[in-house]
Length: 417
Image (tube, rainbow, N blue to C red):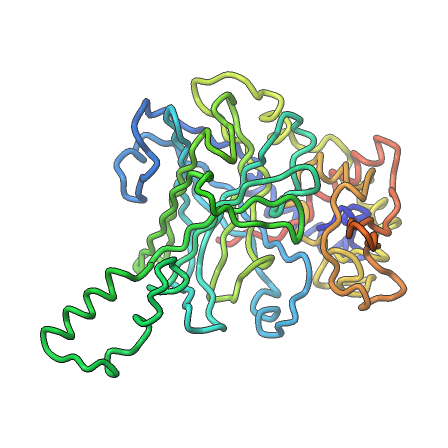
């Protein structure tokens, strides 16, 4: 994940991975353009999944790829997610004079809710990420967490059971079981109703992040966002909606004709949390009827121009010793450097090129600084804590970089049917 990445990957497994991932990639578009339809001045800030206004929206299928930056110290979770595939997500988009909204539909065999009383339960959920600034389409933030000098706002919701703390009310007494209350009959019913009314059944939060370990919750109310989820047990599908203000204390999107958006989903049944998730690359969202940001749309929808076959040979020769790029054949020790086997699914052409040329642009967290003492991912300034990668710039020739990027973009998991 690191720009380290770029040195990039894959060691020898190249042959198997190249064949495995190229076929699915040609069958399903991963760089689609989402068209957001204008719906006038309607208030869509509290829109629901079943709202009739969605009939005006066009639907685009985008692909969310497995992202697992580092290996967790959780054998069960690692086993459950060892062979994850990419997931299709149907996205519809609309916008009004003051907000933009998206509806996402994706498959999930089980409905899993996060419980405040259990530490080994994880909830299904989804998130939307938007860069604070995207004036330079070739300098978008690192996907997922932003990067130094390139902050993002992440809005997240998860399926949760009703909980009472932390919900700001301090009513911990309502966690007391009703069997321990000296109440009976109508009094007990009334108390149960009171407790239910005080419970919090939603988990919607916004964060600002400028790189790993910098994610900070926005608690001052400046991030105006509404999110909802509903599960259909018959179709085994989640439908989620997110409505984000075009202009608030965190983002100023109203003057743009197109936006870069990224979506992520978590599967609680597979113990997904944090870095274990499926995520899209930056996707261009065109606000129909508005002009501007043509360079952004072009950057995010244009395929790489290099020769993937030539790039494969270069990557094998220069990057395979440290980076893993396949499950079937590994020349590098696992997690000696960031795992890149799905890097082509959630990285842009510009990000990959930058990572090869300037590995320090983004430094992802190491698996364990002492895990491979002969090959440490990064060094940290003892005073500032700023991290610098130990990976040198791998290529300077533009043609070589373009070829490497073309190859790296083929490295993606297959897609669920």
